[in-house]
Image (cartoon, rainbow, N blue to C red; front, top):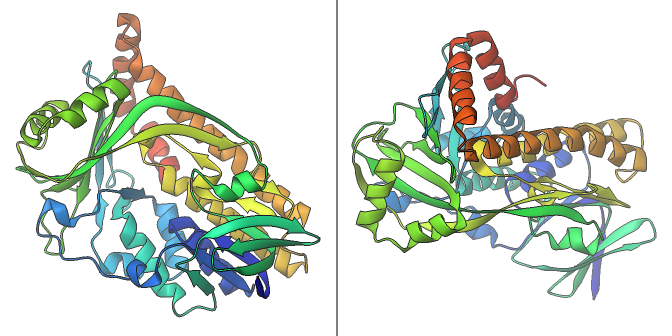
Length: 407
């Protein structure tokens, strides 16, 4: 094995969160390495123009204002806005088993948008475009095969035989993080017994820059607005979370039958569904690491926590981790501390763990609330939604917290 030197910090995982962290750390003056298993050329490849549902990536993220501000500070947001993206000004949520409905409006909150729907690959590409002109040393197209603690350093073994060392290793390698397992950090996790079906559709009616979400006993259905390069407002990204048996039934349908179910599922809010892309389905599992840190080691984003997609907060929780870890490591650098100092890592864990657990508990509560079919629960649920919709100050504060404007 060849030792290629020692870094202050190595980030493993070149996705949306890991790349953002590496950029921020480099700007603080740390010697940073970023390890990404994919090829850099593919990460930087520009997408084809969107002329049909097949041209959009099926996986998208709803980026909050707080996450947008982070990306702006890193110089990556201009790359996002140079490509396909859709700021949304409204969000309508309703109970499929009643009359309760809530509508959130950016104008009421005196803000330009509630957030922005962005294809995941566009986010990663925008970040890597900035990485290309930064001091981050990128190791791409190579897999990590091991991680160990040796004295004051963490060593990373690569599949090509190289060994990298760092005072701090940050695992941003996803929900099934191998680094988390190698570090011996256990998780609390359970299946939701649901699958999320994702695809892209073209609808007869324009989406009106609004995110639409209908809750049912078997899971929520979201229509997230997309925008083509030419400004066509008839495309939406679909995230349909359903109990496993129902998801399998839906996935087995042909496109015509599935489209009919989808139109009924959204109660015709956007008219007829004209075309639909290939469908994908993946199991939903909640996962939370018992610790976010170990000696010379920290977890970031999905490696630390995964959450039900019903509120679209997964990416924003990850960017919340990035903001706090950047803040703590900046303080450490100013104080002359090592990035792996226990005080530094413990502060990161304390600041993020409680907030992430709170959001995860809230999402679990929402899921359970709408899964209940008892008449008293349904009446209370729908009455509460109508009542909240009429209380603008309370409703807008909830929206502001979701947007990350209240910290």
